[in-house]
Length: 281
Image 1 (cartoon, rainbow, N blue to C red):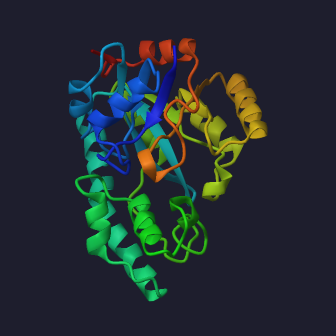
Image 2 (image 1 turned 120 degrees about the vertical axis):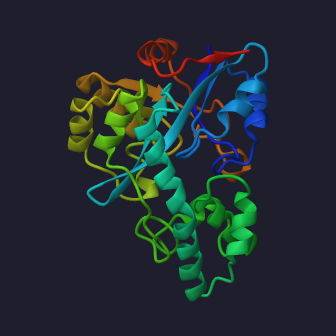
């Protein structure tokens, strides 16, 4: 089985529609794909309705969190999307995305970048607006060569000149809410240092003690040594070790199925999730 547990659609900051994403996943030879748009489940119904035969969809989301000033992302799988407390927190994060993005556009303009909110909103479309949409506008203007090049201290990285904070969950609260909604919690790309500051390993241990189910090990932003280190940490802490592409369509260079999750690990995630079930065509 080929299993990719981290992808994004136009419901957040990917470039494939949810329907297009599941079709692309099947074409890429995947057996299982998780749709984990940022702080939203808006793409789940469309993806489920378009599932090609032989492909299983894992409903999920990637939740925005912050711990001691450090931004981090928590992948939530198989939770009840109607559970009110978690739904309310997702809404708070989404509602804060527009003023935050407008604030970053304003700061970029102060720095001499001729970016407009209208163009960023057009790029985002019906999706949950975020930094990748701003970065795409910067690429169009020739300010940076790639979306990734915008995520530096010069521009919109966490410590960047144009960065603006948004409402983000405490990760311990996120774990509690995910588990309370019957879901499974996996720390996304925990040591992706190229994205900015990461939480220390001691914090991962604390999150594990609070109920964290797993950590994303095999990811494009982890080199081989980092993956080995994280695999050992997962073993020591009794955490599941996942792998995935973090696919965003044409917005990033990663391919569907570039990294995958072991079938036994996926089976354990499916067994632990009680708020929703994997969906098969």
